[in-house]
Length: 198
Image (cartoon, rainbow, N blue to C red; front, side):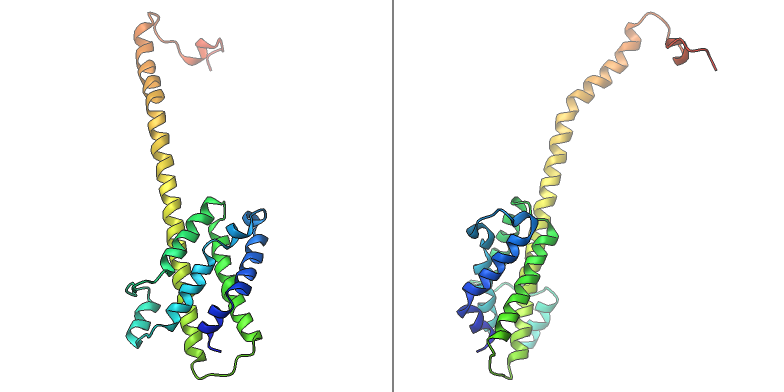
């Protein structure tokens, strides 16, 4: 059985492996099955569909450099984007998200190998297409995760600067006004605290 067909026929065992691995990660320890699996099924199905589409040598070269043109009805990027955003909101860090993809890749290939598929001259092409699709999905997930983290950081800094503007303004005005309101000339710091001058 070719790899894309194997994926579509074995979504449940693959998702079970995904779930077990995700639960072993610190952030996934107490999550339920639905949350752990989130968009994994969509990623798998979109990967298999992408593998079945015809691809020219020029398209393959572009895809390997991240310059591929979006295909109609390709849900891979959307599922990868949603997965990364969900994982961020659940407290997964970037390395944990990346490790999920590494585990998914290894799980699919191990299960396919264990099924003892008959040798096919297209196996190398299938493996190449599978790896390209997983890399595309991972790349999209990392980009989405990073973008969301950057947005959160920028929002935090904007809120912080806004909230600190008034108190800092008040401190600055007070610091400027105090010398004007005090009739005594300013004393050296050591005289103010009663220490002998050095």
